[in-house]
Image (cartoon, rainbow, N blue to C red; front, side, top):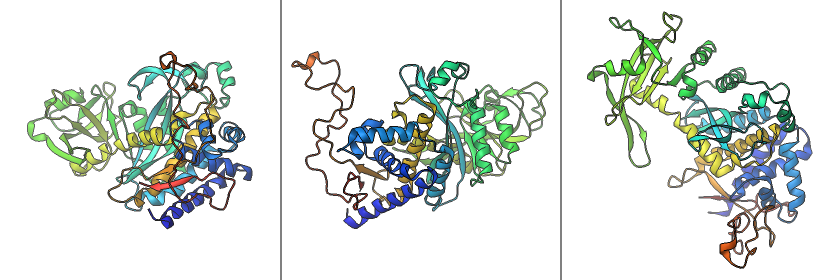
Length: 455
């Protein structure tokens, strides 16, 4: 990599963070914001506050820890305004090769031990695929075929929290927060996006949201179209003559003739092209006997050739004349949110915040999305042969003997088999020969050399 290119990356990061500082209020928050964002991108291993403090200020870890902790847990700045600024900065890069095509609503779970962190409850955890203690955040993302960006992020607070005054007080949950279901939170996020005049797209959602007929009707009432996954037991009335009965979508799929099915390829997979069999039928949703309040829409069905039963169903309010291939492609675009969650957790540390409060949870999530937004804005600069993530950031050397609080001492026992825990890998990378790379803030000798590398 040539030095000029590296310096340009540092300059772009400085300009990006400079714009973000305009929405945090006080000027003394500019430094912690920059360092928090840098820490999320540069820290290896767990990206909680103390390891990030060691990376961004190795000569004054304790003071830096307090500054970052105050910025994320106590400082009164608006998550909504920050996410709006991130959207403003990143959208030009996201739409350079095409307009926004979809809004994706979904939620992501963050496994968590204990019961004191805000919102932690024994509930279904998608990351683990089972019931477990976790926090769940509802998100709204904008997307096209080239990328996606979360633009709203809110914690789902179960009734066990909203109805418990002492737990609310300990976690500093605002008095205005009341119990809302995940679809209700998602609808509020959609309404806010409409009010903010975000470039519109077709609303995509999985079956946990799409099966909610009230949510679908509210989305239609906002003038938006949707492609909503539903469960196989949802009842519909086919619009075609001679089939007036109210049936489940699975029963309807099984009744379709062979010529109704087409094999569609929608995108390249990691090993091969992704293809399956699809059919579509014009229907009216009929959740209640005699219900006739729903307009006509398209039922899209997927039934892979090697499966004994249909596997997926969607209700769509898009143009009924849309080519089947385009409809399938749109429905399948929801996979992008899975990539967002994967990158936010693995590359940014979305789930690594160790604080317990409402404000801290949301501030950390917002800063994670801000850092991720910078990666998105840099992706188009990767060489064609490069990996999907835009860049990596090398951390500066840590002070000798540094070990995060609570990490076991690797020399605690003379016999390794007596150690109960493996020593923490945080801060123990061999930094004796760091790569020579341009500094993010070359004029500030007191700041660490946060470095960027195109991979």
